[in-house]
Length: 416
Image (cartoon, rainbow, N blue to C red; front, side):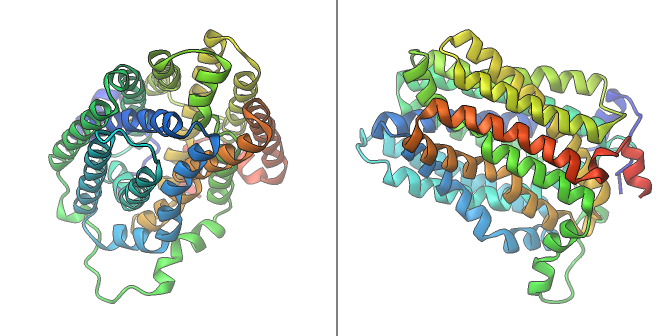
């Protein structure tokens, strides 16, 4: 397996078969998904004028991942991961088309949007555990952290372009935003179809029917691997309480007093911060004191969230979102390198499925939490409280998980 901690150059990493089309697929697909997410939050808030509705939107996308976690990981470990990924992406494109068609009816209810959100969440629940291990499967020997850093750079580039485009396209008509998202998702599917996976990299052909024990093995493995448990649970709670991005439509309109285009750029600020950090990591990856740096950047994320909740200045909010996502990018880089290094390939799908619920889908659960709390105590108190909670969590994990804090190098994980 191509799991080495990595000292090869970026050019050598890009020379690996399938690396370039995988990075291109990530860029194009994520542009479409981010474009749609930004437009969707604005659309729901415009229809309902309710913070709670933004929370319900997040819940509709979270529930499928949570309910299907025992199925999606097993599928990823027993079926061709590329085929599963392409099928799930096709489902996401269908969701974009459904949203486009519904928006043409000048809707007055968000209920059908929530229904599409459930379908989208189900597609993503299958996509994440099948797609994430592919980078580790095709990375050149010793090149996984470098590929992960480049993967993050392309992803964050899309996180700038998608939200920035959404403001302009949504101002024309929501249907234009959703239709453009469908085109991008289709382009991402095409590029993924070009990624070669040799027979030696495919999941083994199952000889027995899957059992419940097989399905829960990802949970068991994480539970008995302290470093994994600490890293994944840290991001789970940080994302859960730091879900201020879900409230950006409210912050933009009620706190900052800006319109659709400025809202799109506020969403894009997160991508700008993450992209700048991803480029820095691609040039100079984190190599020493990995555990301590993971905990510190989570605390920085919390501080930036507090600033976002207190300001009424668009530019201060812009910088706060930028800094928060730059810190989050470091966290993502460390965790994305850590998880495959300590997880055997035959379990990566199931571990990724659990990770998707704990971290990926918890973005939506965090959105639900933020929406509900905001409807009760107001947006500023919700955002500030979430930031403070994130800082407290980072400090608690520093004390409670010394195995995470003491990690120095990725090589230590591989030898362990």
